[in-house]
Image (cartoon, rainbow, N blue to C red; front, side, top):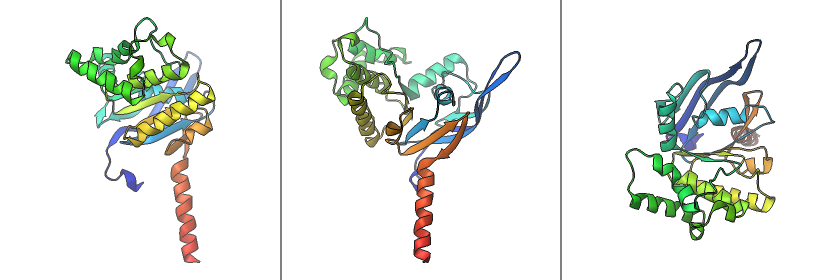
Length: 251
């Protein structure tokens, strides 16, 4: 807990609820979610299918809005903004990494990575765009593939390109949705090692995964069940360790 005393909360969720209503029933996808994500955090969110992981990630990424509660990014309330305002803040602050890569095969790797910068206001110069694209490709060691099309690359290489695209706008946080779901174990391990390195360099990451091996890469592990955060495993482990040390000192 002390590591957060001097750090800034990038994201704060307070009493977030998400209810899907139909004529004859209500489905509570999220119930009273309270969490904060700080600069440099690496958080994993795990749980069974239908537990609310994707809904929570969609709200964090401003792709969906909560039914109730408060959501702040860098201290700004964003829970009830218009779609256009959410899109602008999303482009400035959030980088997405998807299971399915979501690259466009008809354009080059360079243009795929540059795409988020095309929507920046005010418009960036061609020089700045080039510098940021090549810097992002260098971080994932794929600058030599900048003229290729995504469908000319392996799955692991495509995910690296998707990570470069997420990084190109220098976002406050990376939201990562099952990054290894479409990869074999070797490429999955390589992608996770890359995310580990990015976090060590200061990138803030919040990842949804069903794989406990990959959830263990995170510093903070959250479990969801029926839309409720069950426990903070990292915090509980720290508290258990502290309690055990205190007992041993008392003896």
